[in-house]
Amino acid sequence: MPDGILVVLDEAYIHYAVSVERRSAEEAYRKRKNLLILRTFSKVYGLAGLRIGYAIGQPELLAAMTKLKTPFNTSGVAQAAALAALDDHAHVKRCIEANALERKRLSEGLSKLGLRPVRSEANFVFIPVGPEAKAISDDLLHLGVIVRPLGWMGFAEAIRISIGTSQENDKCLEALGRVLEKRAGKSEMAAR
Image (cartoon, rainbow, N blue to C red; front, side):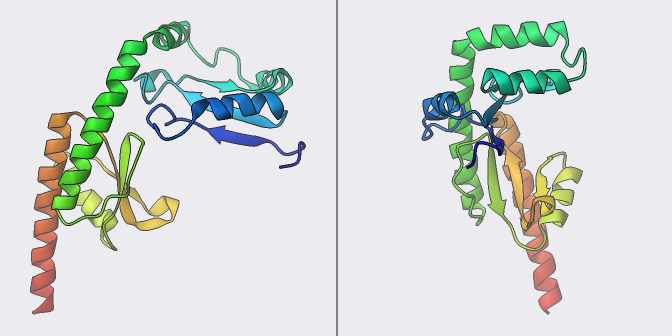
């Protein structure tokens, strides 16, 4: 990429991606004046409600960004929480391990329901469910389970399920099983 074009690398899920070498991106920014790496405290650190993150880049690029930011764009509480989170390595490790365990369990449960979840290293699973993806999402919402239909991203036949606690994932699998069973029954009735 030519130096005059800004390259933004969004690493929101980088802590979960065990197969990715994080250091390579961090080292690349030292060599490239046009590389900006964005990270968030919303995912593995669990600070989504505080709306805080950070950027890694060349000083000149960061200085230009600072000119564009609004005053008081983060609170002192958010900043203090973010700094504390950076030092809480045990919490991050627990979150990564729990996410990996529950992601595997959720993916296996989805497979048992006849679905084919795409292999993931994030804190969510992408699942192709067919042309009724939006309707399935709506049915799940009525059962108290929130999933994201992905039509807005160009995947009209897929949903995204965030990894939750063991209990939340059990509730999701149970509700999804009920929805799929109900929809299969409707399809059989329509075929008659």
